[in-house]
Amino acid sequence: MSYQLVLQWPATEHDSFEALVGMEEALLEGLDSRHEVDGHDIGRAEMNIFVLTDDPIAAFAEAHRVLSAHPAVWNMRAAFRLVGAEDFTVVWPKGLSEFSVS
Image 1 (cartoon, rainbow, N blue to C red):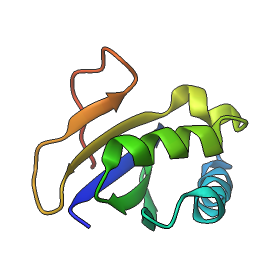
Image 2: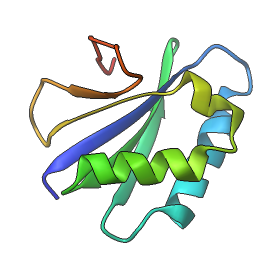
Image 3: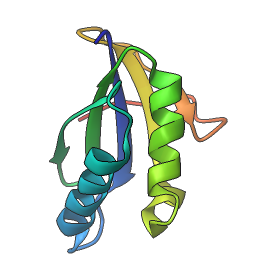
Image 4: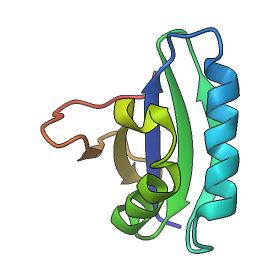
């Protein structure tokens, strides 16, 4: 798979880890087999779920659908890059111009 899609949220609450794991499990169950959930990480300021795919736009659309009932979807940011590359292309929210993974 040639792209890495990163789904990202602020990590500001004490229960962020449980929320992250719950969202990752929902994605593991709900994403099409063309997309592979590749783990997560959590830091002081952000938490991320990584998805490997050959079609990052379709993967994001599916991820957004799967997570649409979760309250954290409103704070989600998403971007993709070629595996091994540095620069991200933002897909959500519209108007976001910078994206990074700490």
